[in-house]
Length: 110
Image 1 (cartoon, helix red, strand yellow):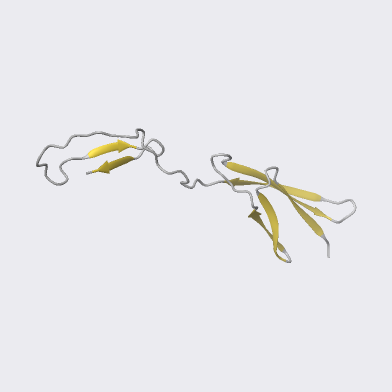
Image 2: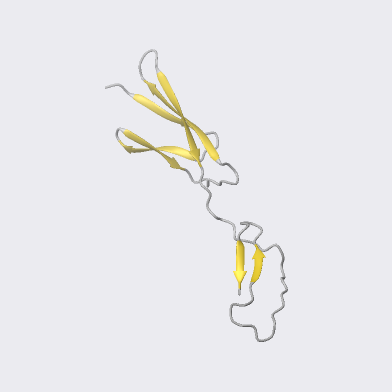
């Protein structure tokens, strides 16, 4: 039976190889956190080398896209907003709009 070695090249050290079974390996994340704001994708190279003389090898490139998680709380553009309400206003008659700066969503307060 031929012996092979498999190596993962990851210059950022976010990923590693883990032997799941005798004949299979999986790519796993390491203790370093992936952050989309720092890197949107990681490029890895997986290399396999046999034990022959001369040794033969092959490699593939693996691209890992980092999905965004909403890890920042929304923020108001101002610290104080002022509005006026008419006396004897009916319920839901007055609406106050404030635009959040981080997510550009519209918040409504009635």
